[in-house]
Image (cartoon, helix red, strand yellow):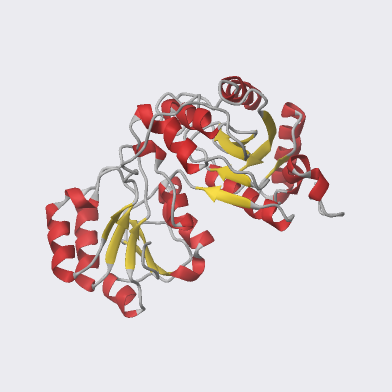
Length: 343
C-alpha cells in the first residue's frame, strides 16, 4: 500500500491527457491529496493547492505520486531531480512510468538512507502463468476503446459503483497505473510479458460463484497499431460476458499517430466482439461510454443520442450523466423504478 496523503506531480507537463494519473487520483481519491506540484512552464492544474516539496511535507504529504504518462514512459533528468527533491523533503515516491525508480541508483541510495519507499506501480507479479482460455464461472464486464486514454478507467469505476448502487456485488479490477493507485491493487498489464497477458487477467478476475461482477479496466485499443497486442491479450483473458465501448468524440486522430483518423464505433464494436468470442462465445455489447468533457451539455446529450442511433446500444457519459442506461441492460431485474437517466 502507498502511504497517503499524496502530493500529485504535474512537473513540466503541457498535455492534459498526459496527467491522467494525477487527475484520476484527484477525482477518485480527493481526500488523500494535499496538493499538486508543477513548474512555472506547466499550464495545467487539478484545482489543488500548488505546493513546493517542502510545503507539501509540512502539510503532511507522505508520498509524491509521479502521476504523468507519455509514450515510452521514460524518466527525464528533470523528473529525477524532482523525485530527489521529494525524498530530500521526507516523502516517499511512487511512479507508474515504465522507467523504474529502482533503476536510478541515486534515488535508491537516497531512499535507503532516509528510510523512505520507492514504489514502482508497473512491477507485475512474478508468478504469472500463460492463459488457458478455459471457461470459468462468474460475470465479467470489460471496457474497450476506440483509442487509448478515452475514459475506460472512468467508465469502469462508474459502472462498478452503479452496479453496487443497484444491490449487485461488483469489484473494480485495475489493469493500469492510475487504476492500481486508486484501487490499491491490480495488474499493470502493459508491463506484462506478452505470453502472460491473458493469464495475468485470468488471475486478476478468477472464477466467482456469488453472482457478482468483475468490472475489468481495459487498456489500449484493438485498432491502435501501437497497443493492440495488450488489448487483445486482455480481451481473451477477461473472458467477458459483456463489453462496453469507450470513445472520445472530440478526438480526430488516434493518440500518438498523427494522420490516422479515429475508427468507427460500429467497426470497433464488431472487431472486439469477434475476437472476444475465442474465449467467451456468448459475449455481447452492453453500451457505449463517451467522454464529452469538451462539449456543453446540449452537445453532449446529442452525441450520446447519435451514438445510440449508430450502434443500437445505450450510450452515456458515465461521469456526467451516470450509467443507468447501461445498467438497465446489465441488470434490469434490479433496476429501481425511475432511475433511468433522461436524455
